[in-house]
Length: 114
Image (cartoon, rainbow, N blue to C red):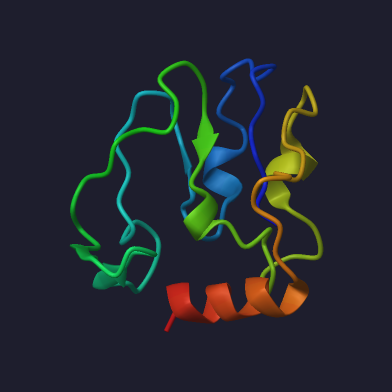
């Protein structure tokens, strides 16, 4: 499952540089699939395709956020999610809306970093 940043976030930014997939962005900042990955084009669940370098709308305007499609819980990089490990207010819990198995997280890591 992906990690989520809750509204308890104090916007300290400690988590952002720790993410090996570049899945964490400051509130209000647009994001790209290509940031920190090897992706060139992404096929979305509806079958449409998007250029990985195209800006995407921010998920939150208020505080740091994690793009679920890019979060692998640091699988293949670290033993535990680094955002949660460095968060001073413990606001990086597992996202119950984006549960994934270890195998799914590993496959996502391989997809992001060809």
